Image 1 (cartoon, rainbow, N blue to C red):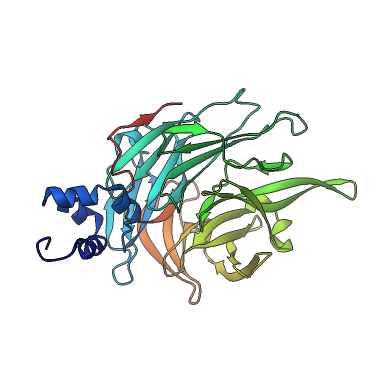
Image 2 (tube, helix red, strand yellow):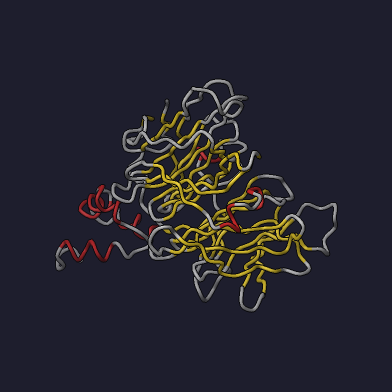
Length: 381
């Protein structure tokens, strides 16, 4: 092919090849290896096929398992592959995925010392030591992860609010790690989130249209009473500026612990659940319609006969992936199942994966990011 086609056409053809075959193409010739390994090709390559990463605790050996499912129209969910995780992921104990962006996953240890950026497609991961600030009981870090759309540079942002004393004059500390420099620094922007805002570490954020978003609560005084109002804080992965997004009243004054975030394609989604009714969830989508941004209720998830433990992700077709606990199961068993819910027919399709009520799921496409990183790299503070 290289003897007859211009280099520009070769590049376009190679961009359409799946990652596994592309890695093999690096062995064809030095010219192809140099092309595929170039920073420009790595930055602009994006696979065509969408996948779902499923993480859960196995009920037999209690180990955390990772499964990748091809999200296609015809064979879903038959094409499942159990993943062998790289050493940095395997060594990260009591971890959870805190973000997914441009085909990369970021895991963070509950011990708060290490984050790992993982490319599932090329089986490569790098570890990042996370700076610690002060007393653990007074400071509680919140992390976000995403890839800058302009530079393709993976970033980790760490917000360290003061937990026990919101009136203290000590400012919040914001740190940003960029993979290109391998170091932590202060953000470009100085507009830090207001100190009245409360970040809940148990609520995971999501990357939408170049912004990492957190669901937070604002503590205000109204009519002499202390109240909490829900809103969204976004962090622009390019300019590194923070922005507040207001929610409609139905969501702003709802109990935050019954709200969660996800995304459908490139739109932000809020899932509204109810303490008194554990098989009904409302799905709201943020619509780009000028300023302010509008939220519209898209549909309601209703599963009579099963307890919905969480709405985890959405297929490329828009169907939600949910974790359920069947009423017919032994009440003393902790096993749950992952299913796909069809909003129109209310039909449920079981994905054939059961675990210990600990599922998480993230969509991703194949990428070459991290290809230029050395195996088992650890970035110190």
